[in-house]
Every structure is written in C-alpha cells, then in structure tokens.
Length: 300
Length: 300
Image 1 (cartoon, each protein chain N blue to C red):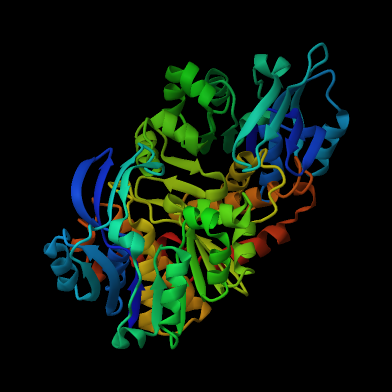
Image 2: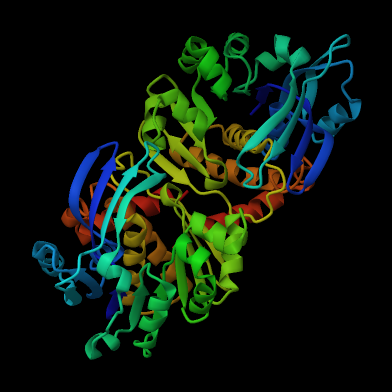
C-alpha cells in the first residue's frame, strides 16, 4: 500500500568518535524513506531552498522514492543541522541549527498523494502536522513523531494531535516528559490514554516498547559494536515499521510486533555508518538475514 | 545439584519514592539465595555480628536455605547499608555504610560445603573471592560478581580472579569501566578475553547481555510499572541464573540463555517490593507464569 511521509530533508554535519562528515543528506523524512522503501513505495513531502544539492534528490529518487512532493523555495535556504555526539553515543549537542525554509513549512499535498493509505508525520510543529492530517482524510493509519520542544512549547497542540492519530512513536526522554513519569511502562500507558491506539517508545541502544489496548511489550535492540553515527536511527525505525505495516496492510498484534522488530533492525543498520552511508548499501536480503538472527536470539 | 553462595548478608535501610523501610534483611547473598532456591538447594556462607537478628536467619532457613555456613562474631557488628534512590530508580546514593565484620570476612568453607558443584562468589574483595575459590577445587562452575570499587582499587586482583572463574556477572557501568569502552557489546567481548568463558552484563530496566565464545545476545527486562525498590535485583538475577544452571546441570547454549531469562524474571519480582518483601511471597509457579508471558512477548 502507498506510504506518505511528511517531514524534513536537511543538510547535516556530524561529529562522532569515528570522525566528522560535512554536508550529509539528513533530515527525518530522508532517514524514514530510506528505511521504508525496503517494504513499500514511498512518497515524500518536504521543502528545501535554492541551495539544495540536486544530487541528494537524485539519490532519493534512485532508491525508488517519489520525490515529486519536495517543494523548492529558490530564494530560501535548506534546513541545516550540525551536531556532535559524546563518546557514549547517547548524548549529543546541537552545535548549530538553521531551520530556514523548514521553519515556514506548509505542506501542500497533491491530489495523488492525498489518496495515500498510510501516513507518517515526521517531527514538525504539531500545527503543521495537524494541517497535514486534514489533507489526507482517507488514510487507514496515521502515525506521528514529536519532540521535547513541542511538548514544552505547544503542549495543547500536541494533545490535540494525539486525539487525531492512530499511533505515536517517540523516544524515552520525550515519553517521560509527556507522561510526567520516570517509569517508561507507566509513561507508555498514560500516553496511550491521551488518544492514540498505540504508542511506541524508542530506547536507542536498549530497543523499543509497544503499548496497545490489549498488550504492552518490549523488544531489545540488535547488539552491534559498530555504532558510527546514531543520527536518524529513530526515523529509520519509524520508516521500517510503517513500511512493513503498509506492505502487510493489517494491524493484527502479530503484524504490529513484527513491524516494531523490523524498525529495530533497520535502525541497527542506520547507525553503522555516517548519515545514510551504510543504509545506501543495505538490501532487503540483508534485513531478512538480520531478522533471522534476531528471531534466533530471542528464542530459547 | 548443590549451589554454594559466598557473600554478604546485611541490615538495609532503604528510601525510594515509595517510602522508607528500616532494618530490612539485605545483602547480596540473601537476595541471591531467595532467588536461587526456586531451582535448587542453596548453601550460604557469610558473616554477621552479635547484633544480628536471629529472625533473619530463621527466615532464610524457613525458605530451605542451608544457613549453617553463617559465621557469627559475637563481639562484632553486622554489615549495615543505608541508601536512597532517585525518582528514576536507577541512580542511588549511599547514605551510610558500615562493613564491620564483613570488612574482615575470611570465608571458611566446611568439608560438606567444599563438595558443592556450583559456586557463586557474590561481591567481595577479589582477594576474598580468590581465597574462596581455593577451598572449592572440585567445582563444575564458578561465577563471580564484582564492583567499581575493586576494579578501581584492586585491578590486578580482579584480573587474576577473571582468569580463574568460568563466568562473570556485572552491571553495565562496571563493564564499561573494566573494559574501558562505552559500547557494551565491545565491552562484553573484551572482558571475556580476560579469562571467563562467559560474561553477563546486567542493564537493570533494560535487561541483560550474554557474551560467550560462540554467541552474544541481549534479552530485555520484563516490563513492570511497579518498581518499589531495586536493591538486590542484580543478586536476584544471579541467583535465579545460577539456580537454574545447577538444576539443569549443563552449560548448553540453550540452557545458558534460559538461565539468563530466569534471572531477568526473578529480578523483576525482586523490585516489586521493599527488600525481600515481595520475593517472600513468590512461588515457582509465579515464576513459570511470568516465563510463559515473557516467551510470548518475545515471539512474533
């Protein structure tokens, strides 16, 4: 089934203990798309400035992603982010962030894209996410991400969003903040009661937790000693999860759990290189091989 | 098969967001024994002072634990620990610690206890652990715990210990320190190369990792929203793991993984009450019911 993602594509500069890379293709919708395309065709809606390198768009297109929804503002500048990771790879500092055209992003969804069945609202202002939702009334499943900034500065809009989406995918610190609980199990249940049918809490190197109406569970991360750059891991997670759900086109408990497992595994590839360097080389066969190892790891 | 644990039994005072409890039965060997006894008979070697409440010993004996190896120093004082947990339940501060008789602990293993097949060296000075090892030459499996203090102040002795034991069970921060790596996967492999046949890294609310010659894996914690007091969770983990191995009396990969799963599950009961309050009420049937739910959680 068709999967639409609306979010940022950006130019990233990243420093980790493994080195520094300038002007990488980044942004939540880029990482999401590269992960989702293993499973289903992906349509991307975003915005860039006149400085956007055409090669980045060409690369996304070369991986089968429908890039016709990327708006170009010739007089504007593209979203740029520069960050540095600490040795533990969990903590990072933003050295510089220039939202530019993404700061004024007003998604315009084409008639064709509006017919998408699966919709992912990558991190953006909740008002922007709500405006996107309105444009895709026939969706079968809408899932959103958010971040601490919006939970703190646009709390009412985040709560409104939660009542209109089917699923929320957020990380552990965001979940604790949103639920006002240090216990993630409690936090997951509390957030689900705010509206979404399911909540997924991403725990980075510790895996992810799922909270639905009938069950709650946790799956561990795939253990890897090669963590080069965690940027976009959460978006890769969401991409693979949504991609698999769109491929299967059902929301059975078994499908949802398998989708979360794919999210975990594809994210484990994402972190093995700078930006999308390693993801570029990964195939569906690689993903399936890792899934086989993962299932074996969890069997006893 | 017979399982011998050598370590502390103590009087704990604990404060958590759920309240404060004074003079609880604590200590690594207490928590270990209460967890291991679900699976196999346990013999306990420790030391207490003249102030030790007989009711604590009676309680351990009432749960089938062989307490004949508890030495009493009538003129000495028992090991006391007072600690406070922060709201996140991961960070704690030691308010007061009085080692007293445990600080001069020289384990004397009786002839009967020396014939034990399975040996767990709970946290103690590595020289004390080495002296214990010497006294149980016919052991089939010796596993040890250690802590940051010894890694920092008795590094050479810890390295000597690692060459004489079959398995090491430590927590994540200890593993990072011992291996000088922020990546736990790398840390586990590095520590295993220092001597032990296997290394288990406990990650608290995030589960545990196993590193053997042929495989490395991670299992998640059992999700619980009722974390009342984490004290002794790691010792409960080790107790259930060693108890199951002694019961099965083999070290097949499948047995080791199942043992780690039991460790995770019994630890999840341990944290649901202050001290050993909840563990007192848990039965093997309760453990098996949780194992069934855990296996279901990890299947998809």
